[in-house]
Amino acid sequence: MSSPQAFDSLATAYDQTFSQSQIARWLRGRVHARLANYWREGQSVLELGSGTGEDTLHLGGRGIHVTATDVSDAMLDIARQKTQELSNVTFERLDLRDLPDDKLLGPYDGVFANFGVVNCIGDWSQLAQWLAKRVKPGGIVAFGVMSRFCLWESAWHLLHLQPRTAFRRWDGVSTFQPDPTQPAINIYYPLVRRLRKDFHNEFRQKSLTPMGFFLPPSDAFGVVEKRPRLFALLTEMEELAMQRPIFASFADHYWIEFERLP
Ligand SMILES: C[S@@+](CC[C@H](N)C(=O)[O-])C[C@H]1O[C@@H](n2cnc3c(N)ncnc32)[C@H](O)[C@@H]1O
Image (cartoon, rainbow, N blue to C red):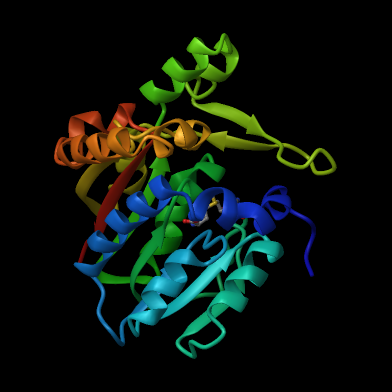
């Protein structure tokens, strides 16, 4: 066992409080639809920050060889249990702040990190160089990234007279301490152009999709989920927003895809 991590304390309740919520499931479904365009049975994919393994289970169930990694042993334990029937899924502890030269060499057909994993690091050029050595030419690298300016979050917390929380992302970094016995960690909010710049030597940006422009961030899931007609309306509007990359910087997350240059 390695040293305890900030996310360990969230692992047990993560699926109940987040993964199983209607909005998270809807958004994850959209991510799965995109990934289905890229990877087929028998191909190899590296997952960063796999959490409790919801996406690992989905891709592994489709016969894709998934190497799922996370810094949190508690998260990895849950993901391992969830996928124990799948011999094509393997796990390894990986800290994105300390990328090893000699491990996880692939080569992979693709790499992904869903729901804010790359927000846990503040230098994406190192990640880009590390991935460039591991992804096949033409392979897809895709991230679900928390945006800098989430309009829903700002409006919601201003309405609740919480101005600090309302603008916590706007400086580009905030702190997160789910477990008071563990040190706080920094959460960074890269602009799209920053990621594009950090990846541009080895990768070409392929697509950009807003995720959670009309649908709220997790703090406010409940207010929409208990109103089925509102949920139906917002998901319809979200489908339209997803076709407009311009909304990406103001949504809760954006989904960005890069292609490894030959
Ligand atoms: C919000 S969760 C997302 C989990 C999963 N990808 C999902 O879609 O549900 C963020 C994950 O990133 C992991 N994480 C945080 N910092 C990390 C780091 N430095 N290296 C690797 N994983 C990290 C956490 O342990 C956690 O499992």
